[in-house]
Length: 495
Image (cartoon, rainbow, N blue to C red; front, side, top):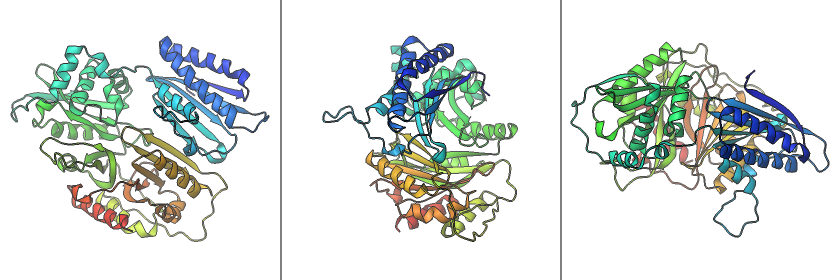
C-alpha cells in the first residue's frame, strides 16, 4: 500500500463534501502545492463529487462512494469510484465556452478538465465507474521559465543554419539532473509545442521522472557540456516492461552530426541491461528517414497508425503538401515469449502471423469452439482522449455482453466531439477478440496492426477516421514489412 495515500468511503450526501475538500487540501499541502493550485484542485474535486452525488444515484438512495487521494512524485492523484446508476461517460455533453446559446450542460466536466492536467474516465462494468484526476506539481513549461532573452534565442534556434556534417565533437551519456532545463529548451526549439509527450516541456518533470527511471534520458553533449541532442526510454503504465524509445530530437543547429545514430544503440543496450521485455518506437511517415534510423537496430514494423497527429510540414520535404501525420510503430523483442497464444480474428490471422514472424516470434492461433458467452454488463473500457492531436484511444480491458453497445456509444460521441481518429485496442489474450472484431469493423473500424507486449498484453489495433480521408500516396514506409502492412490496410479500408 502506498504510504502517501488515503482512502475515504463517503456517504452520497452533500454534507460530507467539506470533509473531502479538507482531505484534498491537506494532501495538496503535503505535496507542496501553492494556495492557488490547491484551490484549483479543490474546485475540480468538488465539481466531480457534486456530479457523483447528483447523478450517480437515484433520488433518496442511501449509498456511498470511494475516494483515493495519493501524493506522488510529480503531483497529486485523486480517484473517485462509484457503483451507482450505469452511465456511459462518452455521453457527457461537450461544453464550448465560445458558444452563447448553451444551457450549461457539460460545464462541470469542462471545468474539471481545465482545472487539472489529466482527467480519465473508466467504465468498470459491474464494478462501477472511476474518474481519475491528476495535477502536476510544476505547471510551468519551459517557455515560462525562460527569460525574455532566452525565449527569443530558443525561438531563433528553430531557424538556425545547420553546421557542416562531422564538424562537432560530442559524447553521449545519461542526462544529469541539472540538464533537465536544457533538454526541455531543446525540445521546444526542435518541436515547438507539438510533441505528444508534454512532460518533456517541464524541466521538473523531466528531472523527477529520470530520478525514478520512468524516463531514461541520454544526451549528446559537446566538449563544453552543451546538450545538443536527446533520446529516452519512456516507461508507460500500459506495459511497464515495454518502454517506448523516443523523445528524440537534435537541436536544429546540430542536425546532421549523427547524434541519434549514436544514441539509439546505447538506449537499446540500456533496455537490455534493465531487463525490459521489449522496446518499441514510432517513426513518422511523411518521410522515411526516422524509420530507417530505427530499423537499423533490429526493430520491425508492427502497426501503422493513420492520421495520428496534427499536420506538419518539414523543411525541404513536401512543403505546402502536408496532411495529418501518420506514424509507423516499430517493435523489437529483447526477450522472446514462449508458447505465445493469440486469439486473433480468422480474417486477420495471416497478416498477424506475418508481423510476429518478422519480429522473430511464432505464435499459436487456437481454434475457438462453441458459442461466445459474455458476463452481463461486465465490460471495462478505458477512454483516453488526446485533444491536441484530436485523437482518442479506446482500450477494452474486459469483455461483457454490453461491449459492442459501449464501443458504439463511445465512437458516436467522440465523433460528435470532432476527434479526427479513434483507435481501438483489443486484447489478443481473450477469445472474444477473435469473435467480436467483425462487429467493431461494421462500425467503420479497420485494421491498423498489432501491439505486442509482455505477460499477455498483446493487442490488436483497429482505427477509425472521422470523415477524414487519408492520402495513402503520402504515407512512406521504409521496410518491406511496413509496406506489406500498408497494402493490407489499404485493402481493408476500402471494404
